[in-house]
Image 1 (tube, rainbow over the protein chains, first blue to last red):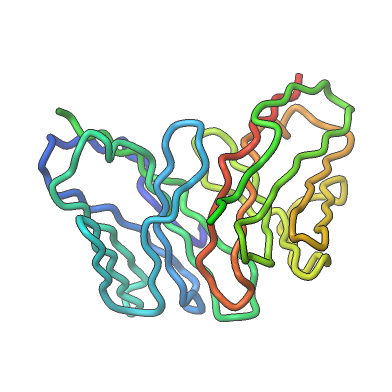
Image 2: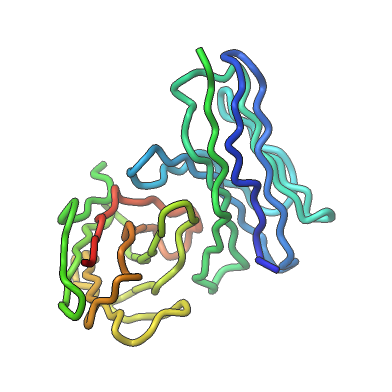
Length: 112
Length: 112
């Protein structure tokens, strides 16, 4: 079993839809959670980062962490064709550790 | 604020050769990590450098080695290249006391 599981998609939605992207994980030591957006053949771009459980909102993006269920989500409101990309979740344990574990990424396509 | 930069953008090498990839960290960042991303996969952690020393390593053989310089820039060296080394190599930097890391655009290595 992988430490981080992420549905690879592809996920196709119409423009303006609310998108929900998710990751599950098995390591209860993970405390730091990140979402990256990666366009084709480019480096990942940091979108959101959260510590421990709770919600964080930034514009059209909301990140949620449920540590009791070992489940994290990224919501995108009013999705745009420019949101079409691969979304990667990443996580890490407490300070002093260096190993960030990534999901395989979910491909999202927003149709105009 | 200057972001993470990497060079070269693309590289084609022959099996058995050696390669050096370069990374300049984001301004103010003292910790650099290297990742390998195969097509359709998430980034896999290779190693991390802090204060010019490797302080964390993933499941990669010793033919993957690196350096960090006093200005926090870094190199990744891969000896005895194999076909499976073909991938996007990503450099990420952060401040040691923070957990959010930022990626460069990557170097796409093709081994023939």
